[in-house]
Length: 309
Image (cartoon, rainbow, N blue to C red):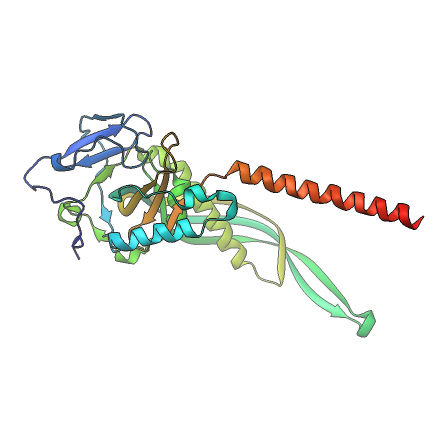
């Protein structure tokens, strides 16, 4: 399965790639000379400079192909605008969409074996009596043991331009469609180089792994309920592979003097995320109406009390 039939720009494959770094968000883009850009794909900053290639930078091991066509991505963006609440204001709902840009965003794929020792109290519930005298009781017993699980498919952003919290909002990706990376797979598409090293993402990856372990342990516990779960986990056989993720990036231009709102659209599933700012005039108006209603209600109660006295 190669790249889909809607490349952003048809580049000449004999040209050597060019690396550009954004001085604002830190994104590191790998482009052909025909794809040279004057602004960053992510933050739209014009402060983009050519960067020297770093041969020590990790190479991609896997990649996912684009599935979502650009016209569908644009429709998802318009639906996102229409779905914004009243507090976001009509300015952003009616704002023009900028240029849709495809990019392969770098992420690290983490896996490990997790072995845990745990202590917990297991509860067994039973009932006594009947009718109005029916009571439910829980009998607690201590339990200690060991548990092992394989942690996999944890995706952590390797881009300074896309914080991991934002990438999580457009996940999950269907990793069953993952391919071994080849240059042909992303031919004609802009790709970002990892601007965070594996060492920098270990902490985030391990934190997500521990959340997975906590979830698995709670599901593993016997009995009707449990409490006071404590565990100590050792991670081993850890691996961290560079993965390229298909992503549509689209700015929504709210105003000439306001930074655009950035939309991220999963290039495989179409899941979308954008942080739409609040319309503070509407927020203040809503608060004023609520306070006014409370004051009017209080005065009404006082007036009724005077009339009835």
